[in-house]
Length: 631
Image (spheres, rainbow, N blue to C red):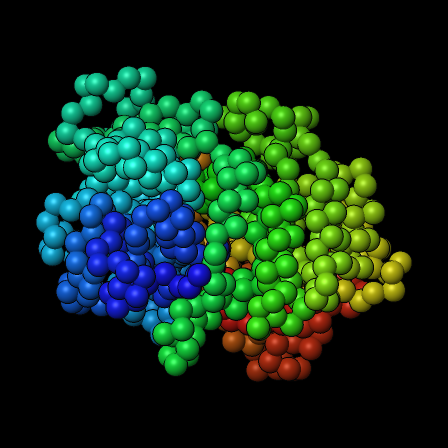
């Protein structure tokens, strides 16, 4: 097999003069199962349909989407693996200098709000041709949603794009049904009742057993109604019990069918068995390549879904809370293919998913009834029905490690430490982890240490993190290894005050740690935290939440995480003065900064704070890098 066509000449080499589907994507074409366009296109090809891809068409020239002519069935449109607005702008709404999903990291090859722009281009050229949209940008904008970049509530992306159908979530399950019905002769315009899809209707009189959300016009002008509607939307994302949801937009109705059922292990195995080339299309070689492939080229997706329940994460609405896993045999088969890749050096960079150690469903009830509507699996405390067992995951790691040609297997997707602690064989597995699957450092995501903030994040208390860290270093000491922890931290999350940010700074100082990667909270569509940010309310309780929106305060909270950087001195000092914590300005050992800005001494980043040595809790190390990570 070869790459799928991206030009008409390539299509003709396959003997195709007309295509059934044309897939327009905001990413460069990378034929790897970590890229949505690759998975969807390979499934369509495997089911006997002819498909061509148009990666990153010129958005200033509508003729760029006409290279194949009009498809027989439909156009497929996705902004790419990332939301186009997140790909283009930092949390401060400043343009990013690079786009790792474009040749040579060049930015500007996809438009803002790519899904809408591409659909409008199609409509201009082909009128009423069927259009199906999907991917994370479309999935998280299926109803009226708060748009951070315009600071307002926008309509459903179905309205703005004029698409006929929206496939939300990962997309394979609804695609299987749609393709099967097309084979039986149904018209794509008539396929409206597939779970995992949304559409626009003029009349809903024939709908039964649905929930009517507050209209677009109502939630656009009333934050309480927005929060209430979001809570309903959130709770109905259960494929076993979720109801049809409807939201009126003037004279039209956006209809969300219930979520699709989780993929079975057999279906997951099928998806990852397709003939991916695991590389970017050769056309990009002379253009500098596609950087986004580098981290995932030799990584294995072993499962999907996450029952962690972090409020700032959109996985609830996209992959869902129910774990869907591949078989061990499927994973081993993929590794054997990787061993023969010309660029493979013997290292598997990752085996995991959204959370590496969530390999099994949270409980047996989820397999019959789905995830609970009104409670989380781990928060505020672990559910009594939670199943905790890492044996299968570590068995896979061990098996892959023994495959001929594999030198080392790493875990880089991060682990959920509170879940790890619950395993009765925790010490055994942490020893195995430290001995065999860490390249000197372990990634964790405590996100904060103030329990006030952690509660609003849906994260465990700081004490749980400290307990894991202490056990981790006890094990490393026993093994005679010097390995570290790299924690991800977030500033300015809803609920975080200057007092909380100072508490975090003091924790970092106590543990002699300056974080490598810091993320300012980024309000993206489809998260609980974004709803808090916009409304100032907890959508489930309607309690008021403090929101650090002022740019000056946000800069102060971020600066406190790098309190020892001279460039941050003024912001740190101002934060301490506002919070009435001037006791932390001085020459004593507990001070965050010295009284005199011009007499700080030491290196720019602070030689005592840059590396962790002999601390009482985290014993972590890190380097300061002024960047924002993307989740």
